[in-house]
Length: 86
Image (tube, rainbow, N blue to C red; front, side, top):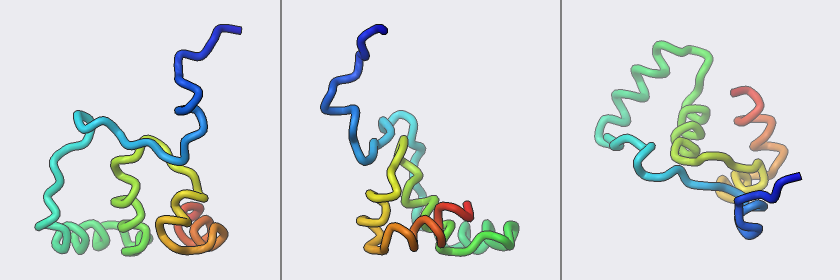
């Protein structure tokens, strides 16, 4: 089996940010109108789902444990209420 080209210290990370060249400019001043427009077109989505998607927008990957620490919620609550329904 070939050796991995990834450093061992990078193998077991909790999250990884995307390089800046892949993240578009953020226009947070339009957040309220964009939120109302987006949620109006998608009635099954709630603000908590939208906020979660904005929270993880610039991440390449994440673990439920890391998200639960950042959200200050239990692992089960984050998994059941936010991640699984999406």
